Image (cartoon, rainbow, N blue to C red; front, side):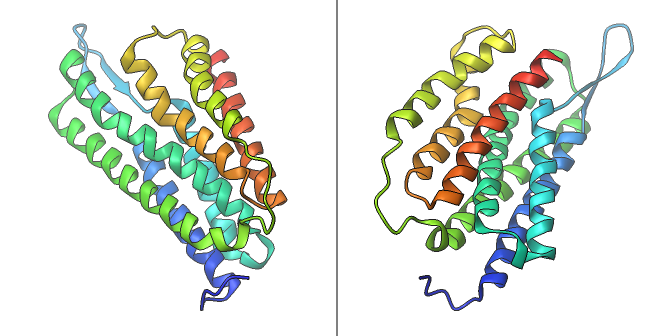
Length: 225
């Protein structure tokens, strides 16, 4: 049993607020483009990958549900939301570097660069805070009362295999930069979720493992559209 002085509904709402704020900032970052003038004089736009918007929207929906109807939303939902926030934190961190690379290579307007970098930094910080809040608040409620079979080997397989899979399906070049970006998001968050799932109750374990499968399948599906 948890010894937190806050009632269960209040703890769920705390998680929901953190997830909602993170998702809102991430959605703003996802939908604010970097703009530049091409040699032909045509205004072009650069954005985060499509999956970033999907993660943000899913996190907003889950956060709203936990704030509005906490009694009906299990802590397993918050655990899955923590995984989404980890995705956003990793991708935002990668975006901070990539925006400057795009600006140097293609000449993004300085005012536009300031906007997208600020939003990427804000979403990275908010996502990191959201992950911490979800972990601290939910762990006493979702940890297993008995020892579970460890999933360390499966987590290692996910960590090593996810970058190879996603770089391949997206048609990218196997470079250290591409592998590092895929490791930060979604590879390491997925591997962490799989490892953590082995320590959680059955409902949370299924939520985490299911979220990993759905997230990776959606990423692959979007690359084929």
